[in-house]
Structures are given as C-alpha cells and as structure tokens.
Image (cartoon, rainbow, N blue to C red; front, top):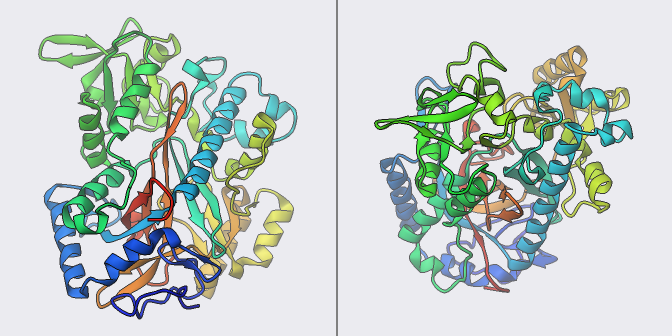
Length: 487
C-alpha cells in the first residue's frame, strides 16, 4: 500500500509503509488529517539536516546520562535509549478513547486485587481459575485481609498498547509491578523542544512535565499521616532503570534511598540522615516483592529493608505499588482481564485484548502446537522481549525448540496471532523508513486515576522486527497528544 493521497513529493516522497497502518499518514481509508501541518513541516526539511539534528539529540542524551543498563551485553553495558526525532502523533479524540480505556483497565485490576486478597468472589464464581491466581509466584498470602488506602493496589501502571493494520488499538500487556520508561517520555519531550522547536511551534501539544507532581500527590494521598515524608526506594546503581530512579526522585523532590538507608524500629520505618533517624511514611518502591523484605520473602536479599512488611501491615507506611500486584500483570491472567471488566464494572472493554490462548488449557495448547509457525509464543514470566518465538520469522530449529518447551511446561506459555503493528516514519541511515511502534501510557492512581497524555512510544529500529524492547535494540519517539482537533 502507498501512503494516503496528499503526501508531498519531497523528503517523504519515497516513504512507503506497505500494508501497515501508519501513525503519521493513517491508512487509505482513514487518513490522519490531524498530522497535516506536521507532515508539511517535515517535508520541507533536508534529510542531511534531519540526520544532523538526530545525531545532536543522541549526543545530548548521552551527555545528560540518560541511559539504561543491558545486563546481557558485556561489551556495551551502559547505553542511551536510541531516540528518533520524528514524533508519534495522537489526535485528541484518539487520546480520549485511550485514556478512558486505560482508566477502565486500572479500575478493574484494582478491584481484582482487592477481591483476591479479601473475599475471592471472582474465584468462587469460577470466572478465573483459582489455581491460576493462588498458584501464581507473585501471589502474596501476606496480603490476605489487608486493607490498603482507597483499595488501590496499582498506583503506577504502564499498559502496553499496539495498533493493528485496521487502526484498532489493542492491549498487549499490563505492567502493574514496577513499570519503567516514564523518564524517557519527559526527557524525549525536553529533547524535542531543544532540537525541533520549529516543528512543534503552534501545534498545540499536551504537556508531560507534570508527571512528577502527580506522582507525589498520589504518594501523599496514600500516606498514613498528614505532611508525610515520601522517598523513592531503588535497588541501586546497577539496576537497569537507575537513571529513571534519579529522575523521578528529582521530579518529586524527595530523597532517593536504597535499602541500607532505611531501618525499621518498633514497626515504623526511618531513614538514616546526618541528623539521626527521620520517619518515612510513603515509599515509591522500584524493587520487586521478592527483594523487599528479607524477613518475609527472599532471606538472601541485600537490597530490601528487614521488617518493612510488618510496618506496612500495621499501616505505618504506604507502599506503591502494593505488595502482591504482580498477579495482575501475569501474561496468563491478562487473558481474563476482559472478563474482570465485565464482572466488576459490568462494562465491555473499551480497548480490547489481543486474541490470546493460554497453553495450560489442553485445547489452547493443541491449537498452538498445530499452528506454531503462524503464532507468537510468549513465556508468562519473562519481560523485556526475552523468550518470545515469532512463528513466521522463526527457523525450523527455533520452532522445534519452542515445541519442546511448550510440551515440557505448557502452563508457562501463551500464544497470540502475529499483530501487524502500526509503523511510524523513522530516520534511518540513508532514508526515512517505516518502523514498528507500540505505546505505553502511564496511569497514576490514588483516590482517582490520571493518565499521562501520551506515553512511551517504543520503536523497533531493526528493519522487519516486531520487538520494540530497549533490551532487544529498540528505541523511542516523543509522543504528541494534540490538544484540539486537526493540527
């Protein structure tokens, strides 16, 4: 497919998204009228000038220390997240739809978490298999019967969305434990304002730089006292998202601490300071449950705070996200979220799931084995794009290896059809080419839910690949949510 009519004969003249829905141009039957002015401005640029600005942006990202760590790469551990200067643009009506859908999903998942740690009605009614929840390695019996402020368990959520070739947004994955990436959303915007002010001028783009204030407001809301001390708890400098921990602590204006900086005394949490111990009331933790409290979970953990679970259970400290939220972002539980929405809210999902089969179910396993070459198979416990087999692009050996793993441990896998992810024009070595993108909006929930306008648009920089994860060579784009109608 060529791009819709009206494409200028200039810098973008040779650009062709093929059969994919294009985020800048739309589709033949659904042209993106809201991007007309942006396309016009891009078209007037010289490619060499565009490349120069892109290189300036990446150089500045590195100089600012906006990096992430790749544990599996011994030669290039500390990297910048590659940044593409052509933005991904979302119209005001599209954003209203996405915002409503994300808010609905957060509400249902919080109701689900409250239910499974209290009355377990959804399990008793057989809507979700009991063993799928209670047998989940992220289910925490210590949370049973424990009330949390506003019944909010997932205070910070990242919902991974994709758009198919028909232009329909779908939920690919929920991230309700310690979702990362929001620092790149804010820094990408700052970068675009520095290197591309002429492209942004008078467009009317919703701001993203108030995320830290919104996060702090939520942390204050859930605290057990007025005027609380809020801190951000990090695993430390070797964590892949350590830059983001520094960034968010600065944006909130709160101390960045590690486990060794905190101590529990008489079931209350204190921070070590030069003036002695200072009470801590609300903790935004970027530390998984397993490492949080060596007394309660992994006794070998050197990253956590001994006794913090009991302080939490007694209501003396607030934690975001709550302990035990990992059940809600399990890839097998994901399949049941549309049923949760119907069960708890009596609504249909605003944003549908990608069609998914749970291989723990015999029929689904057989279907997956029979159609392995046409499906995407994912392990339920992995993140970062690891362990995925994309059937149409896998070798015979890779398919056989996947088949062996499926038969050995079917409950560890789900399968999905290959989604033809939408594309966005991307600056490559010699031309502007289409590359696949996804979107991770971030929602903050205290008393109510607020969704950051836009989110992290990840881009698969390797030609032909559908995997956008940074650990697999992906990059990011600035995401513009327009304030009004057409730009």
